[in-house]
Image (cartoon, rainbow, N blue to C red; front, top):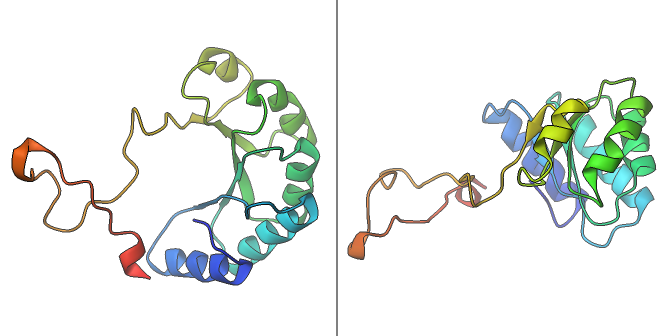
Amino acid sequence: MQGKSVEEAVRYARHAEKLGARALISLPPAKADAAAQVAYYHEIGKATALPLFVQAVGNMSVETVLEMYRRTPTLRYIKDEAGQPLLRMAALREGTGGELKIFTGAHGRTLIDEMIRGLVGEHAGRRLSRTCTPRPGTCGRRASAGKFRPKCSARASF
């Protein structure tokens, strides 16, 4: 989940918890500096008791992620897509005493090496998985011309 503001992200997080979500994953706000990223995740993390994933993208540094981890008790996972995740794993594990669970979004390119270094999960991307929820009544049905209906209903619940 991602909000245009921290208030919107907190509202989404609370809504997800109310609906029975078991964890949250959130992209950082666009064009935010490190301090703003830390504050953003801290506010989301204190809004619910759900385990939180930081989705590290762009130039989010290991130091920024470690500061988020120290300030946000519910931050337990990272989906690391910033820089070269394989080269960042040791610093993330060492800086959190092995407590931060690492997923990557490298689409399997370095999966074996990541597993050797302690990876707990891999997000394969849109090519291999589908992450949207079909609208009720459309799951598995085909539209005309034999194509699956690609509609998602996640936003409709807000």
